[in-house]
Length: 328
Image 1 (cartoon, rainbow, N blue to C red):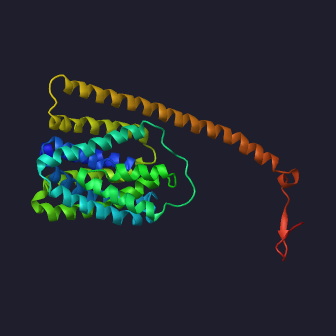
Image 2 (image 1 turned 135 degrees about the vertical axis):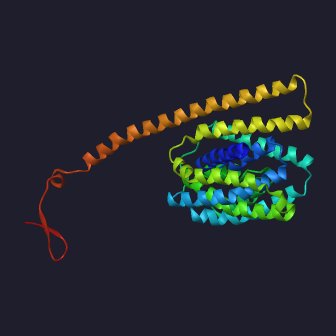
């Protein structure tokens, strides 16, 4: 019971992170299950089965808050489902010994990517035009494959790519990616069911993760408007890197003073990323404050210059039959 409560709490925190960043539910949950000694295919299968419920709840919540671009959802979900099904089939056919370092390597890489991504200022300006299907289709295919084979990765691949394009509001990127993930999680679960059978899913674990995620989904859809994604992304990236480094170090059979030196180096990199994230967040806020301060006097000057004394004077008028105002 205590373990299930911990898993429910993990599901809650993971969904809060995912709903606020558009990524990291699968990364966070899969990393914990791997640390607990669960086989990679079983961990990914259980997380994706739980994600069917959490992503549905997240999609509904994001839709209610106006965070979803349905055009993007329809063009990224189907290729993502195809990639996820293929990835689940591949992971199901690999032995546990071979899959563990593979999955840890994917999670480690994605965690490092989060550190680098959120240590820099986030792009907030938007370019003109719409995202094309020839960009969204391949993106969904790759993101879905990485998601199923790594136990997570749909958000870390899809969300930054859409953000960098500069053609969508950040909140709509997050809402659309979370909503499309419902289809991706379903396809991955079908692939794992075919490859592993029903015994490949840890149903108590699935239920605990699902309950925590369902509780957090509506709150996360609201938090996406106010949470500082810069700090949250850097923080969760460091956790994922350090946790999966354990599996990689064990697979590489690094012993003696090398192991603590590697951990110390990774911790120093995490700390540096957090410091850079804080600085980037402060610079962004100062820039926005300066823009707002400079825009207000300019708007007032334009308004006063374009207002004539005659226009400022209140003159009662009647509308004639022709629709033109006439003085009384």
